[in-house]
Length: 188
Image 1: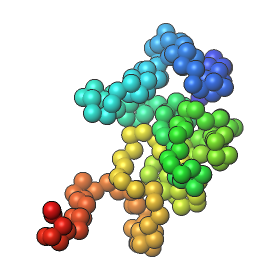
Image 2 (image 1 turned 45 degrees about the vertical axis):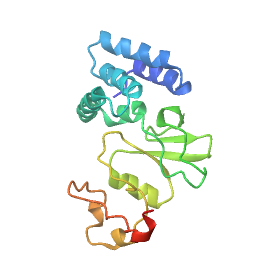
Image 3 (image 1 turned 180 degrees about the horizontal axis):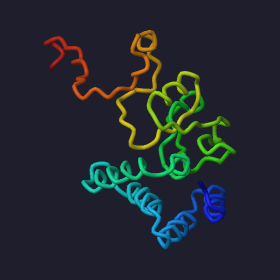
């Protein structure tokens, strides 16, 4: 799975995740071995430099999605860069942390947040994230997973439904309800 060299680079990266030099040195090392993981690391940084409205963002995201499917999921969980969700109890606002900046643990899919003192679980699917969210865990959902607004919030009617295992299905035909109409005298 991981070579001794991989482990050495990963240890250096996880000990100082904000230090981009170690990430890029690792990507260069992977490039010399024609390893597609180098492209993944470089695309992660490229996506972080782009706005979601930039046309190149969609191309980068599409390529990352392809690479995620072909790479070792344990390795991807180390280098993916999702935001932290379901941490609203600890902060009066959304958690400012990102997965790559959290403290590593013995499990590649679990990290520790020094801000809220909680474990954060890396989730590869939406149902997995929803399961952790229902348990009150902080989560980082793999980038590229199809999402919809408020898909991690508890929904009692959904969990009692016979189709509970398809919670998180992305419905392309979903249209939000119309906002309530204002009385005619409130238009002025």
